Image 1 (spheres, rainbow, N blue to C red):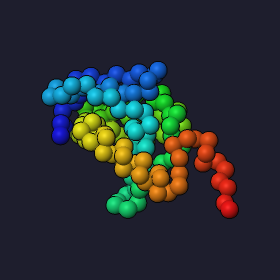
Image 2 (cartoon, rainbow, N blue to C red):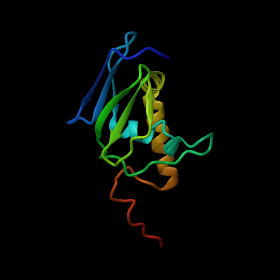
Image 3 (cartoon, rainbow, N blue to C red):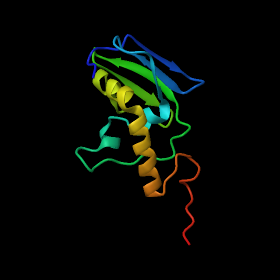
Length: 128
């Protein structure tokens, strides 16, 4: 896993994807939704194993700002107001290397919780 800064970070508003290029790999695309639901923030990850908070209703989320944090990370701001996660170079490399597995695990957690990626379905629940 790379701990060096990416050679390039480019966000496509129309595709809602962050393109990340490390020196030792081809460019990889990380969707805004994946970045948001796997935010390294304590709000999402908790303060220890088992304290994670499942994020739902984020299928339409956008990145609205990207700020460098020293020489080791970026801070992403999302249009839902979330901005507390610091995406270190190592964490971005982890997401790039494991994005398919992480995405599938996220979808499975949503299904098990009866939650949805759609922001409009979590407002009203019909219990019968």
